[in-house]
Length: 228
Length: 229
Image (tube, rainbow over all chains, first blue to last red; front, top):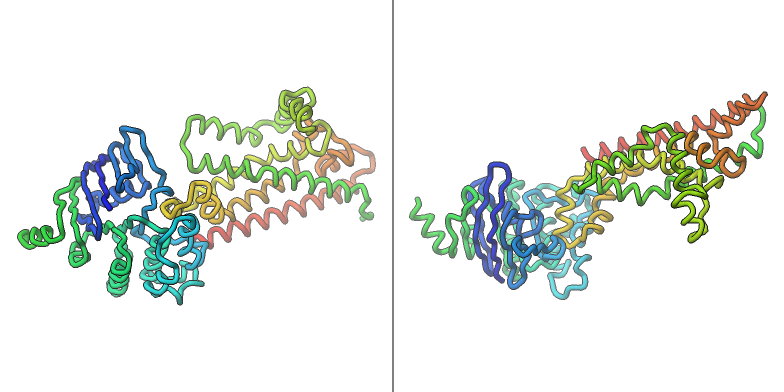
């Protein structure tokens, strides 16, 4: 898998101008709040139309403003776990989980619902509505829902931000289990480097809308240590 | 108070039929327009908004007259519809339903638009990343979440259609058994010497149906607020 993002985008006084590449495994997109990390994910997922630039996933061009190419969000096969779980309030947990899978039922492969339910320990929650879930439970359902839509790339936007510390420690092992069982490449956005230090294969650091570092996790770790 | 006459019951039935058809026929176009106004920015959006709301602000007689010119037997659209689809509006109950529908349309659109605007767009974005096309996003996410607002709009629209007078009498006249709905029947009874008692019965009936519609609409609006909190 290779993801290429070369975009510029301006919102008010914020200006994003980034060129980055990411490969297989887990890419950590780190940087302070307001650095532009979510904007990058939004451009990759098709939630945001960048002013200028290119987004390419493997050989497929998702966005090319020069050529006028725009692949609609629902055709991108990019799973997105937002900062807030965004579970559909009128559907049960089970219906939320199976929502994306239904639209992609003609596509082969993907993780089976049973496996996701077991891996994320969701079976006690299936009949409930999102309003009756804790923050950690909601985020687990959101993760399962994104995985069941057969993504070829997973975007995780600070999936633990709205979760308290106890539940953070509860979710991270699930993520590890999923990544161990299925080799789905992921871009993990966080402003706390420690959250992904052990897990990342590659690191991209963003600050004030610019890429300040892009390299392997090993290089990133030594860089951080030198920095201290 | 004297007994109900068969004619009065027929008037009520015809009114319910006209208002029901008018409301049902307006559902899809109203949802489409409400969605466009709530979710899309396009050239002519303000103009569309004004045109939709015109029946609410111009005198109903004007709306009736315009309907006559467009959908009447000599009208541009009316001639075409009669020739190719066999649809006739002038002096028919279908014309009464059209007039009622046009008059109720802005109310349905307004309520549906508010309902749609209240749906958090984040849910729609999520659904799209999960593979739902814009139409599926609307059907599976936007519409169910906006449903209380949409239903409230349809009920108010139904009540408005039921009470329609000016546009109806101008467009399709006041023909007993064909276009004489509740409001027109009350008017006819008042014009008739000794018709006050019958008029009063119809007035109470009309008030009763309208109150029921308002109560239902309020209940739906309250359930919307509850589900949002």
